[in-house]
Amino acid sequence: QVLLVQSGAEVKRPGASVTVSCKASGNTLRDYYMHWLRQAPGQGLEWMGWINPKSGGTIYSQKFEGRVTVTRDTSIRTVYMELSGLKPDDTAVYYCARGAMIRGVTWFDPWGQGTLVTVSS
Amino acid sequence: EIVMTQSPATLSVSPGERATLSCRASQSVGSNLAWYQQKPGQAPRLLILGASTRATGIPVRFSGSGSGTAFTLTINSLQSEDFAVYYCQQYDSWPPGTFGPGTKVDIK
Figure 1 (spheres, each protein chain N blue to C red):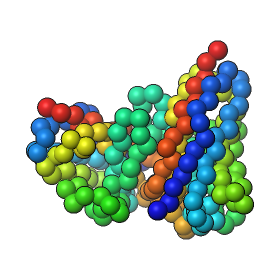
Figure 2: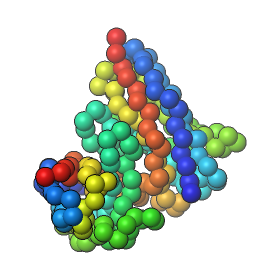
Figure 3: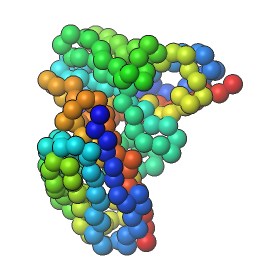
Figure 4: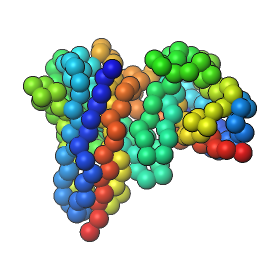
């Protein structure tokens, strides 16, 4: 069973950056697209970006282009999401999720447990 | 860009009864539709993929149907652990994470 374990909650000031990590079991990072999504308090789910398992290339939602960076370190089976220029409305739970092996647009399973990022002055 | 809608926003159901949730896409997504369950404080959990295929470990009381633009998630004989928010998601076309706004199933 694949497990995704994320880093702990963060509190940041407006304008700062945050990095959330997601450690995967097995060969997940080498075989599957890995995605980042977020959910603001009481709101729905919003896709942010993905990293390609073979090339390591990334694709981001236009909404976050220029502010989000997804990277990975396959040696420690960890994928990272950095969001810069934080604003109060970036306050949300951030999730990593596994996608498919050969296609970026797919369902998500499983999900990490989520990381709450709070942006407040 | 495809827009997903769900109805009703809230569904009040008694334990043991059946719940029927609807999801519509603004254009055809074929059978490329997934359903997720989310409980308070938890990550979403995949229930259904391919519109009607239960994910691993999902109880048989959960079933999905539909294709094209209209989809249904049916939960038979609701258990206490089924009270949650349910989201549909299309994965037929860009962008990857196109979710509906969710249906909250609560206790009547």
